[in-house]
Length: 364
Image 1 (tube, helix red, strand yellow):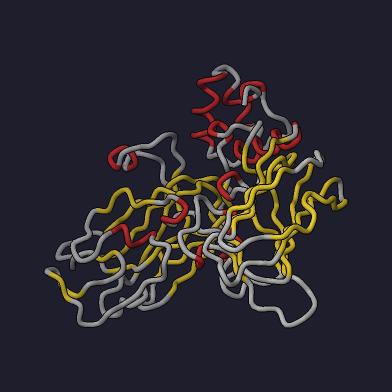
Image 2 (image 1 turned 90 degrees about the vertical axis):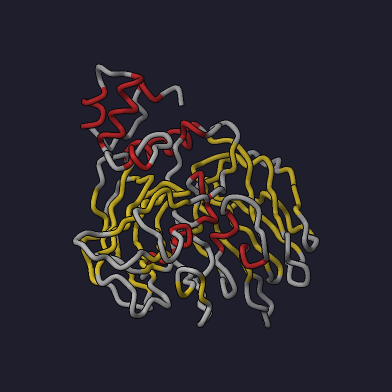
């Protein structure tokens, strides 16, 4: 299950939400995308029975299936899905399947019922009280997923793992966080992730607690910990933010930044002292165009967020736009181009993947 190391695209922590379910009599649909692991307290009964930390529908007395539709907080390419039935033992669904859709704007549940849903996970058996993993092989960018359970029952969490693909129409490509997960950045590698994932460093928003940052084990040698970030695209870093919020007795003593420019590592921020529980901001004056940034923390510890504000190069703009446009389902790509260049839209979409930005998208 290598895909589980990829970011969660549907989690509430990154803005995901459950926009509709046909039934949630026993337990609320919103639990499906909670960032925390499911929990269970026996003999905790409400007016509708045992309280479950998940989504649970009533027992069906007629043919049919139950469904829930989730809007991804980070639209992107789905690499794998985990249907987690933790603590559902005599009441889990025996089968499920998952579909994906790519839509413009913010459609209502009724409008989503009319869109073109594409299969991501075929009808598959489920085990109770189990994290059921399913790999996905589809290169397209999706904005929504739909979970179908057959015929009814309970699911604790739906984890949708993949690669975020940013929509350049909603970004200022001249000034953005080059390291933001929602802008298409990612973690290349790190020395240690004993307590929490380094992907937390570049996640949206501020960390609410220590566990929403990146924290390493205590080092007992002369080395130091590090993490490498693949930027959203090639750009020039102007301002670095190293946030140690919530890390009081376990923040790094100092940190340094280097960027990968043309195959060589250049210094962006020299080894600099850090304070616990503090948002540090440092101007970066190097001016080199970089594709990756490595942060070294000395000797170990935890960091809540890493922000690298800057501007994309021309090559970076091209790559970010094409990464998005080449992965759009054909119907969505046609709809976008038809507004800008209706005459050539079909020919452009049919010729994907493109190596250069088409004139209709040049304004981006």
